[in-house]
Image 1: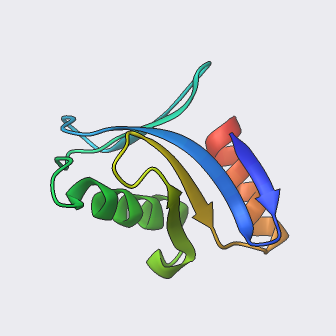
Image 2: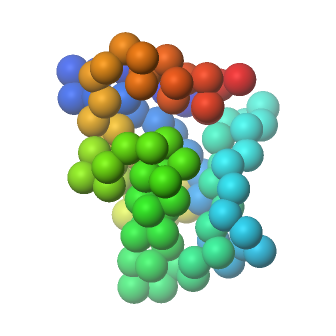
Length: 95
């Protein structure tokens, strides 16, 4: 799910577009993010970055979709190196 690398924190996510509201869901299968955006013309990817930026309180420029641009399964890189922020993210996604 979460992996610390030299470039930042990698997160494996499953995206559920066309949802009634934006939310993060933690389950036994992993982290799912529901988005209201449609998966058309990159709208869901843009909405994902905006939502994560707001929820995690980090700049959009610190968030990069590394894998899965056209897939519901995505790997996101959060360019975060501050130990306090990493701990906050681990608590947000793992607990």
